[in-house]
Image (cartoon, rainbow, N blue to C red; front, side, top):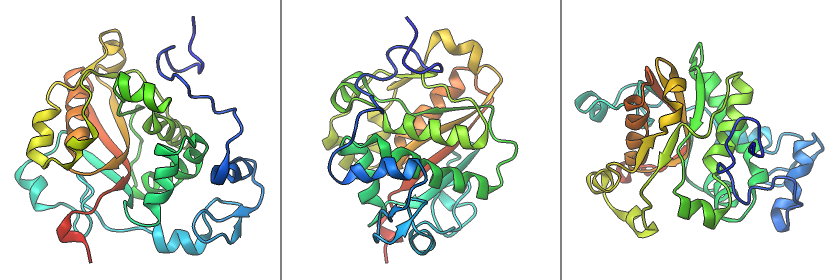
Length: 261
């Protein structure tokens, strides 16, 4: 039986019903999708774009970042020079700080997938601004474990990937990778090395999709990057599955302690 969406298998989503009417603060979002004026997601000024121009400039403006890990301030950071990343390029749209973290939290934790178009548009804008041309052949997302998908009901990174792919004119394929290891949320406090050890073997390329991956460049989408261990493991799995190269597209990156004001 075909999946709910033409470009995904039946197991790609479980309770991902984007047609249901949202409740609470997310109830504003469907009006934005139809181009109606609605309060800015941050300051409540009327806008047709979800995020008004002053808030875009203040919180979602361009920032020089490392082209392979997204660290702000340099075009290639010392860490990437010393330890090259599996991805050939990295685009990060935003810093994971207030108020952007609140918007992502609505999408990720408050059962509000209708926020994906707004946040996906911000990521797509960053991708276009980065000058990546031509875009990678296909777009995919960091998969959730079966346990996490069952809890949340949808993969927020896939919703973002689908939005970005549509805006850059590339196909979105959600099932190129499978996640075989579930990490407890408490493991998020582990350092980079510990996270890397925990994630070894967590992702595997889907055997039936190796013909799709072989020789093709892939954009890997994730919602939030902290240590980079998750995206490193997923990018490595894509390369092991036959991808020619991996580009990392991340909505927001958590600043390291030395990057905070």
